[in-house]
Length: 272
Image (cartoon, rainbow, N blue to C red):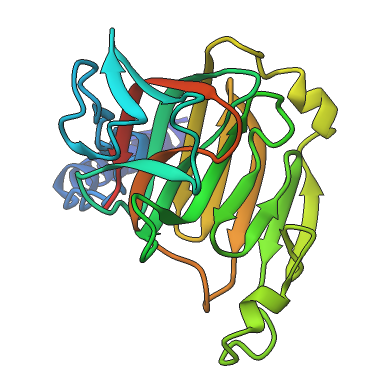
């Protein structure tokens, strides 16, 4: 019996000593270094949208005032029977040549109207107030609204409802090679890689003779056109010969019958 008590006492002593040692080791252990964590992407401030049209004048824009005016917060392009056009004419924003950006605005166009929003464009020589470059197409009959059309260039890059990848033409050093790669007013060196919906279903989203919103996103070689919040066309431009990565912004009145097009709430967010 005394032997058993002595053994129990020794076990308790050993347990106590072990507990003390473990406590000391834990208390004296150097705290771990904090691990660096990348800041979440959504906490990094993005540039804000800014207005590029003051709604009261054409200040900051260059165009033929025969066709363009500011009135009641609206940029108006008008062709009358007395001012019919011989070539398409633009009013151009003077604020820079954006590369990666988002542009938001609202438009309303007469049924007889034909217009468009150009971006990453250059001045076309020898024609007054003319641009060459990507265009978010707009027309009153809604045949083309939403598509990506390159004014005075490769013509149609993506019809409404298409996701397309664009390639360079054959023999690009030949001055006639660009013209040769266009057929039926569309660029032949393109692959339709997906659908965004049936063109007629997308057309039903666009309001005739009323205000619609347009949102253009240009990031790298990715170009997207949205109307009333719906993606209408998407282009991946792999054509390193002809594509442009920055350029002018402008809006158009097109050759044709008398017409009116209106733009308002023109907002730009630039990423470079």
